[in-house]
Image (cartoon, rainbow, N blue to C red; front, side):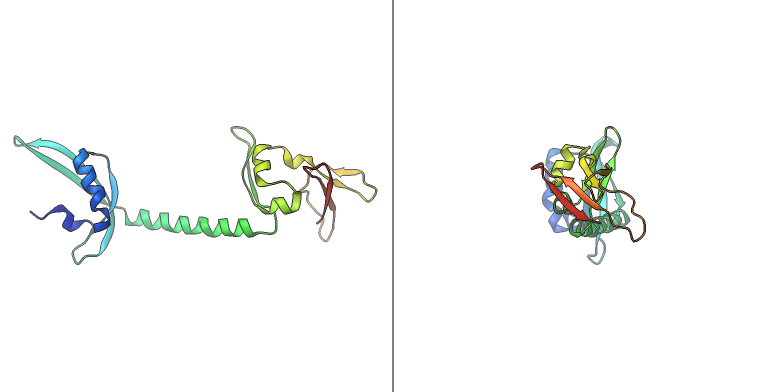
Length: 171
């Protein structure tokens, strides 16, 4: 017959109190305290029932520590990737074809290289096709900006910028 709050980490007391007052039976993730005071992540769900003619609550508690650790590692990994992608000198992008062609991500370096902001690419999924590769005499030799280069080869890429001027990039 111990008070329930003795087993719940103090930062979750208000949340649990609110759920009790509202009689909210939906599951909640929180930290409980093990014997000795060590916190552990759990999912708690309760349901009011009648048992032997009396109102009572049945509570299930599931240890979700491994799930929380995995989420933490995933968040850290995503943060490292985001930092890498946003500070890369090259353009990194993720393009999806379904349900309709669109950029899911394009790195900020695209502005320096192309003159177009990432937002412009998000708004126009065909923007990459507006880049051209010119030969020495100014003729279009490739319609796409990111072409496969031969080893050691260099191609000058000229982008048609938003101001309708050309910007040259050495590859």
